[in-house]
Image 1 (tube, rainbow, N blue to C red):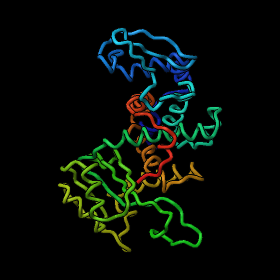
Image 2: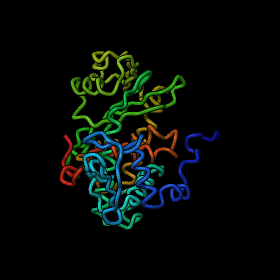
Image 3: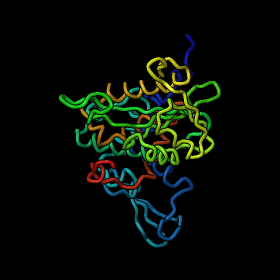
Length: 317
């Protein structure tokens, strides 16, 4: 059996993580570099001359030498007003980016030695960061698309796709010339109708994309979005599982469902579907370079605005 270069890549080992991010000062240096790649610049006057001091053990404050404006290192980022040291945040990002499988909130609580509520906030803030970063992903070239559902059937409720607990989402996979997967998009949708698919296509597909689907009627909207649409109609005698063009999308969807349902045994997928899908998509699209994934997540985190718990717990549209 041929070894997969992706599966057997080095990644970021625990020892390497501790060497690079083991102290508060090391984590602060990484956040500072991600926030101001060319050095501190005052947001009010644009001056770069500044002084720093500490407010307690975990808060680093920058003061502009020109206008005297003060700002903390984490102000206006996903780490805004955090009571936890950055080392805890970085440990969480390490577990979320380097594990092959998802990490549940309960497991994160035990690994980090924090309360369940703190672990919930931390995990959902990082998942929201991953989701928002993935909203800029646009697939091009050959793209295989499929309709999918996630969520179990309720006792006494409808069965199959009509179940009240099943959440519909689109799975799209950009492939290379040999049909191997490159990048993916997983998006929750309100339903599989032409208007919904058209809006999704305009957000996540390049107009020149060649889209392969199973011929679901709503997928006709791909053409309205400027894409070339190839229909591979399936049915009782021609199932997608036996068709080579759908082999990778079926494999990726199977892995996604296993990763989510195998890790999270009590979660509100109906309410937070985009975050759970965004977390998987973020890792999948960066699987070619595991070692750099944590630092890339830090860059995304400092670009995220503060996310208070009240907003964090709001239901998605």
